Amino acid sequence: MRIEWEDPQQWERISRGLLSPAEAAELQVRLSGRVSLEDARNGFPLTVAGVDVSIRRESFEDVAVACIALMEWGNWRLLAVFRAAEPVRFPYIPGLLSFRELPVILRAAERLPEPPDLFMVDGAGIAHPRFFGLACHLGVVTGCPSVGVAKSRLVGTHEPLPEDRGSSVPLLFEGKVAGTVLRTRRGVRPLYVSPGHRVSLGTSADLALAACTRFRLPEPVRAAHKLAGDQTSLYS
DNA sequence: GCGACAG
DNA sequence: ATCTTGTCGC
Ligand SMILES: [Mg+2]
Image (cartoon, rainbow, N blue to C red; front, side, top):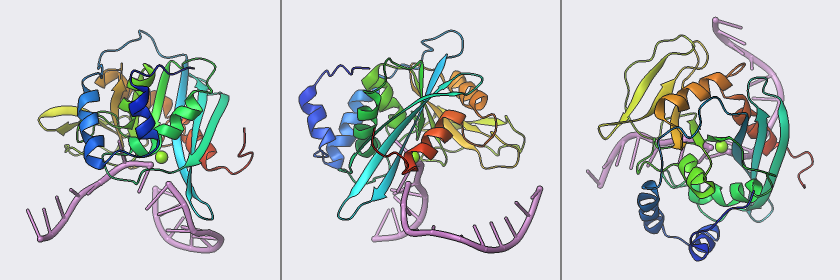
């Protein structure tokens, strides 16, 4: 898929890791206005693209490897895998993860023959300090629906969560519901699910739970995570 | 100033 | 996230 840049110059600065944390944060505030929390789709998505990035310590630099695992809804068969690698150019700063991971993710996304029905990202959606996590950034830039699935809490508070699979409680932040704390396996640590773009709060949690058929993590995200760290056939 | 803090 | 094998618990 091809990505249409509204401001190619600015993307150039971002991908080169030239933005200061303050500039990055204000850009998030500006872009958060473009997020849509409406469902852009009726039924379930036909294809779900799991997204994750792994960092490998090379001889003199850290290299980021992005992996997009395209799966078919329901039977969760792996349809294809797209990857890309490049040196890390931005430090990890809580709240600014997209400036570190999005550049390499987009290079892998460009290899998709066509836009997926949904991007399921390892990281936060609107459950973020400025309501603009990695899943939102990827969604807004590509125009595709996206959901953020975080393994731990970035922001927000919530009531106690029952131990049963499927239990959920709203994640509250600054007086708003920013996401859902979701138990995908009985007695196992919950996931922090939030909309990225073009998906509603309720739907984002439904989609995430439906994709967790065997493990704590949704199948597409788990596949992407595994393949991102796999050194086998690191080219492509 | 102190503590929190996706990956 | 990463450095890393075996081990504890359901
Ligand atoms: Mg990750």
